[in-house]
Length: 163
Image 1 (spheres, rainbow, N blue to C red):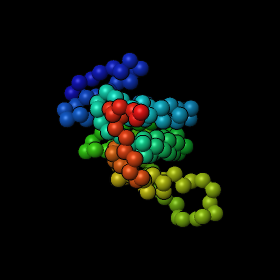
Image 2: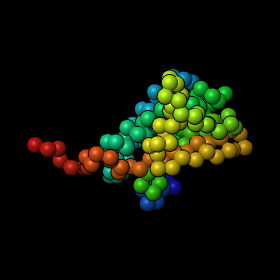
Image 3: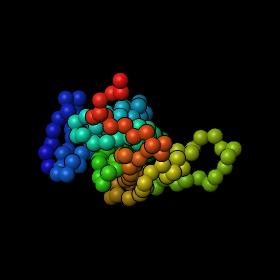
Image 4: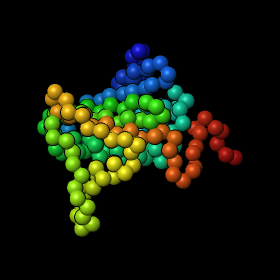
């Protein structure tokens, strides 16, 4: 394992076979937007620094999943939380740890309900979703395929722009 600083205060772990991860702690609601920024930077760096393909759709899905999971953590768990993004098996694993031991639950379908649909959306968009109880709190892990693109407009960031 090689620990490297990216110049912006983020620590990146580089493993063999191009496994890359970043982790950030959060303590306040204002950090939800920062978590999305971390995800956006992580995905851009996967393309630019690590020469990995990331579809535009996957970028949007990862940002949405990060936003939903960190928002739920801030809303329902006392204390700090931890966001980790890691590439494994062609997917980004979004992991959010918090101090609340109660697992998240999906509410029954109700088209008249306003809000509280975030977990439903996450479950619909992710390749996998897991909740693990920890000695303190829980760890929620959602995996999003990097090269997934429902409309087929995969963009290789290494390619020259069209003329």
